[in-house]
Length: 256
Ligand SMILES: [Ca+2]
Ligand SMILES: [Ca+2]
Image 1 (cartoon, rainbow, N blue to C red):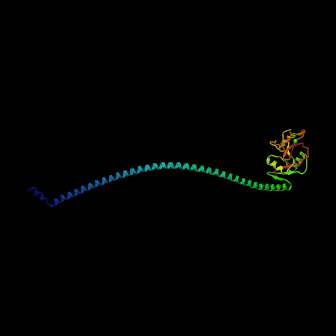
Image 2: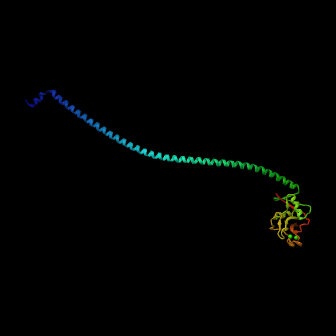
Image 3: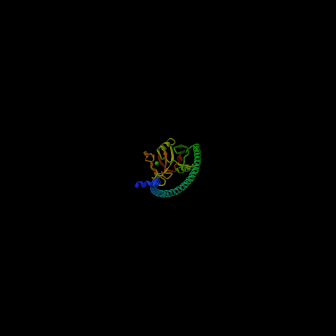
């Protein structure tokens, strides 16, 4: 008997188990391969997941660091803002106090203004009454003064007394315009000018010293004739010194 026969003698059952064993083996190999593949896949996925997680953690750490820095900066800004707010509150308080002071000052000035307006109106009314009374009393206005021309004759001192009793004084001629104005109303009259205190030093009745006069130069006035001429008179458009007791008309000046 040959081997072929022997193998053939094992029958179809033995051949079938061999084939089934191979399928089983192949299935096992495949299963094992799949298991290895699954394990490899799991490991790869795990590694990939770990890497992703590590990157995410790294990114989170970076974000956290950035956020911490931003938080620190925000805290710094917040502190600065608090200081600015406090400073603004202080400024507002100061401005409010200044405003209140200004308002008080404004109200005080407004009250003063109202009083001044009232006083101005009263003074204007008084001035109008004074002007009217002066004009009624024969006074003539020229620029900022009123003038009274007497019709009686008195000594220089009595003339001055008469002017003072009217609230004025003897006229002081202090400008060419005033000299020309008097020329239209006077021929001869006492003026408020004398050298009574010091010979040769001519002073007006308000104490100021004469700086320029319209003296009669033809006769060398003021000439202090006979050593007795200490009072000045207005005579035909020019001035002359005369003895003070001499009766003369007189002219008063009232500055308003
Ligand atoms: Ca004299
Ligand atoms: Ca004279």
